[in-house]
Length: 281
Image 1 (spheres, rainbow, N blue to C red):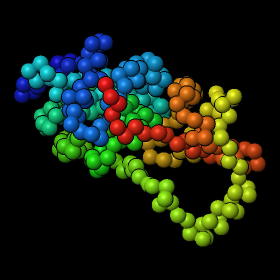
Image 2 (cartoon, rainbow, N blue to C red):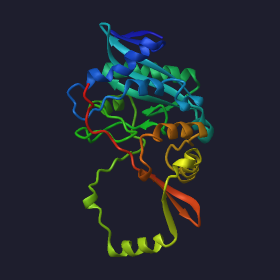
Image 3 (cartoon, helix red, strand yellow):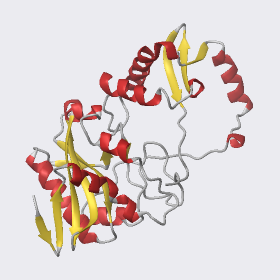
């Protein structure tokens, strides 16, 4: 699909060169932003390919907006069949929105995404998700002076206003908290409760010798504990297995803990290292 809107040309991403340009575009938006961390091209390329296990249940399409032959924006639209099965809604999603400060560019990009979603039977749209809620989620509206946390995108201050101008409204707040370890204090009553709980709960590191099985334990805990949260979509076995392959050599054993009661796993926590500076090129 191609259309012109006030000298704006919307083009589908249909081949490897198109995808390469789509992935590279944000670099032209954030060259002077010290809080933007350029993603690795190989990781983004795999994310937008069949190597992403999410594509087992997600169909998607991407577009770029051009002016005078230069890319000025990008967007994706996607249908997550697991979301539809769970909520029984004809909802589609958008994601990976980036564009220069021009409301007409946003209008053209969202027009393309909405038209495609309608052709897929969707009558509602929410986002941004890249590509679903278990991957990158949310639109930055505060905190432009800090680097993004894991699984959360960066953004420009004008995004929210231009998107709201198109009739969109906030669905929910997604929060990232910054805390110094020295600020972590507990009241006497809470300390007493923690001491009581420790007698019943066993905390252990992940067993790397049984890594695949451990990842499935984490998946079961997550899907069970998260199922009533806003927008929840369950992780598939394939997704969690792939995530495990990615984390296995990146996350030390002492950054993944599992809690057990009577030897039965009941909770887990993963500490992720977030890059806060750009790698030298």
